[in-house]
Image (tube, rainbow, N blue to C red):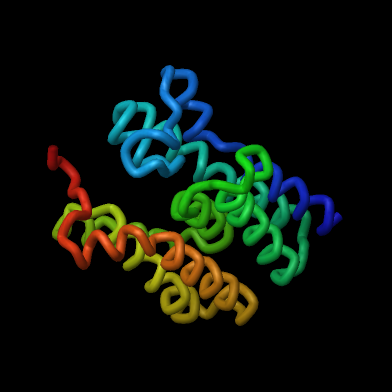
Length: 193
């Protein structure tokens, strides 16, 4: 059962919602803006409503399989595997030649199903950082770094904390280009044109 749900989780995570929404709007999202298939690039290039739709769908890709795994009473190790599978599906989708997004929204969905109260803290961290910096990538990295500390402080099992460390490291690695632009002072801010 755990193996089946993990496979389902990866395939669900692989559904390239940003690419699909962009295509329906007549745009190949990979060829505009940052070239990323995530919600931020969709919002910037196709419109905020479609960006919000992408965000919701990407969160759901992480939330649904983890929620199902928890309902089935799978072990924390199995649940962590299911969460990682959804996350890696978004990063390396089989339907887009393994060229996916940065995983922030899908990681949010995984954590929301697994640790709702801790996730509210992380959403608050994201919100505070985005309010002051106006930069999505800085907020995403800050929330990713805060995730293992927050889960540990909420006394979640080591398996879940370890999963969050993996998610955080991968999210930071996927933001390498953003970090380079931040250092060069060229990273776009919200509301900037």
